[in-house]
Amino acid sequence: MNFEKDMKTLTEIPAICGHEDKMIAYVLRRLEGLCDQVHVDRLGNVTATYPGNDKEAGSIAYFAHMDEVGLIVKKVEEDGFLRLERIGGVPEKILPAALVDVHTLDETKSYRAVIGNTSHHLTPADKKFAVTTIGELYVDLGCTSKEEVLELGIDIGSVVTYVPNFTLLGKYVASKALDDRMGIYTLLYLAEELPKTEHAATVHLIFTVQEEFNIRSATPTFHRLQPDAAICVDISPACDTPELKGRYEMALGKGVAIMYMNFHGRGTLGGLLPNPKLNAFLEKTAKEEHITYQKEVVLGVITDDAFTQHAGTEGIPMAHLSIPLRYTHSLAETACQKDIEDCAKLMLASACKFGKHVDLRRGV
Image (cartoon, rainbow, N blue to C red; front, side):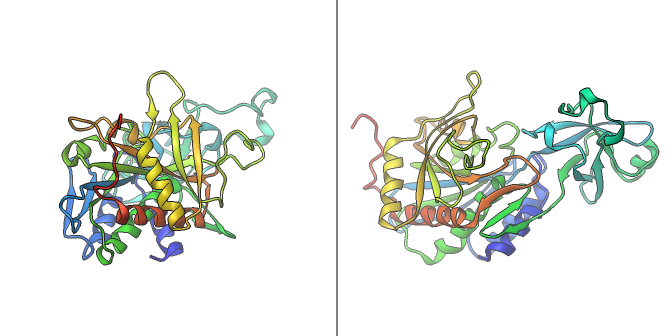
């Protein structure tokens, strides 16, 4: 793995929810020669399976999502402007004046555009400090008519993604779509290392789709595989910036986080309370391997494992590894390279150490 090259490539691939085909194709190319058992389901979830050397050792799965947040065209105005809806949790406050790529319906081409922002000189006083809602926003494609837009292959249903912008910030990296291309990076790291590493248990690497939209699209894969344990790899908001300092303990540069609870924070959409013994196994492994880690409890975050834990006939013991991330779902998400690499190391070490001796039964 080449961190800078791989992360730049991963974040440049457009893969908005439900439109992950370019990322699926990239993952399949990367898995060529590294895995003999690759499966793509009808939703697009990709599974790479590495059999263990002990049939009694069971199986463990690691999973991360390929998709990213973005927008979709809901209307083409007669004067060529595009109206939008959000796909996933796009924060409206960051959108005015943002550069975006508008993709043709067949997704073979994209065109650079800007999301309109009322000229400062003519903005009324009562609007200068207000967030422009998604219903008010529009995309300026440089076209002057609806016909001109349609001739480009853009229409209702065309998706809109943030412009690729991978940047090194000292020991940090900033980019759109670090959520969850960092997780995909760690899975690809395992894909390269597992063929040359002894592991008793069978290991599944699962690259999932549509996490940012419905959080449930990985469930069929877990019904099919029913692993003995599974570990989700995703992001969690870092709370080391001035406005969030002290809210939670998550910080850049302090290692991967072992999550003890996450929760959406509204209604019954839920979250994950991980298997205590699986968490203890991860902590023990991190200590034995001298891998830096932190602990996480957070409200406002939910991901695939909230629902995949219920798969199969008996449920699946789940744990969650988080990579701290600043400015989530924005145009310039920011993370620390060391935290990403610590996450990958803990995943590999735990895959190699997992086996029948790891007792995940409840009530025992």
